[in-house]
Image 1 (cartoon, rainbow, N blue to C red):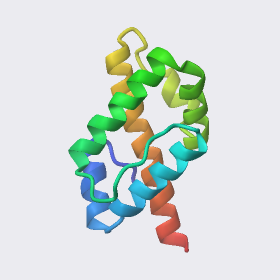
Image 2: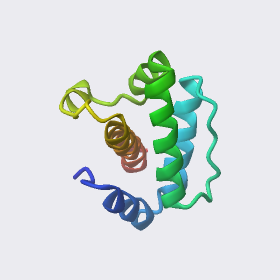
Image 3: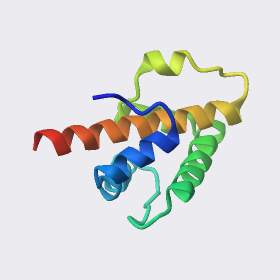
Length: 116
């Protein structure tokens, strides 16, 4: 499996494999497990998904850092990848973390699709 390198590639792969709705379901499931009040509709546009997810991650970093860390743990975002990010600019950091979350959620959905 080759992990998507950017948001556009991630979305095109999920749509190509018809996994977009499963991706949304997985995101909703993990956010619920992290006690974050967020529930995306399965028909949400990819651009809206990216924007809203980015907004939530930014607010978590700014206002609820413990919940942010818990979300990263539940989603299972690699600590190595988080450590390589530039933490000087919170907006840029939240954008990069948003992509890492989407990337990891995509991996979960892809694996479930391949092996179930």
